[in-house]
Length: 244
Image (cartoon, rainbow, N blue to C red; front, side):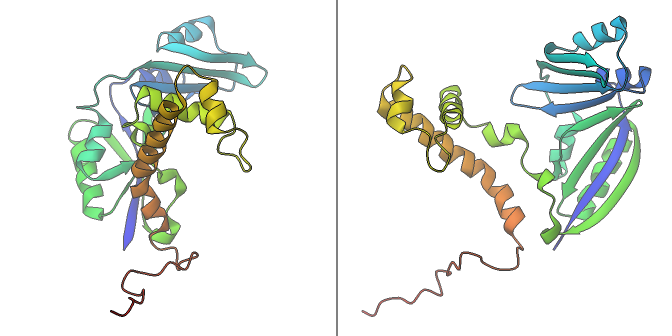
């Protein structure tokens, strides 16, 4: 079975696209996270103060630097409902969005992967109904060539985790719990927090389980046609059953 990758650009009412049209030397990359958008803006030249103010109006500035290499700004803003967004249309047509969205010279650039070429055609026809669309490439790719850029968007990987589970997972990661050998223990992690060891362990184990469950569908895609079984796992049918 082949997968189908499509890259295209659109013109649509969007503040990022409009800024890129007014300032054609800018490159704007946009990621959708849990309940926010993170935008990275770069330019080869130092910006005017007017442009800097325009960028700051997009959201909270997380990082800003201007040096001989040009401008680099990262902002975060609230994520409006995606109900009528282009990303929602991707999902409606069974197409997997590959972030980030890139805004440059007045165009929004997208890439998607679908399991059926008919889904790609239907998606493009849907988009062409209310916006300018220019197809850049359509390619059939074998499962063995599945790009790792197709892996799950961050919001899908973490969407079912609670704030406490996310905090426990991040704390364990930062303290070296997942290194080999481990840089810390569960007891040491719990002692550094205000929760009991059993409670901290419950948060961490649930976070790990949810994360792996959410990533499972993408893991299966990446390994579906790997051309062998490196672990030598036997199927249930192949395992010899003990005699009665």
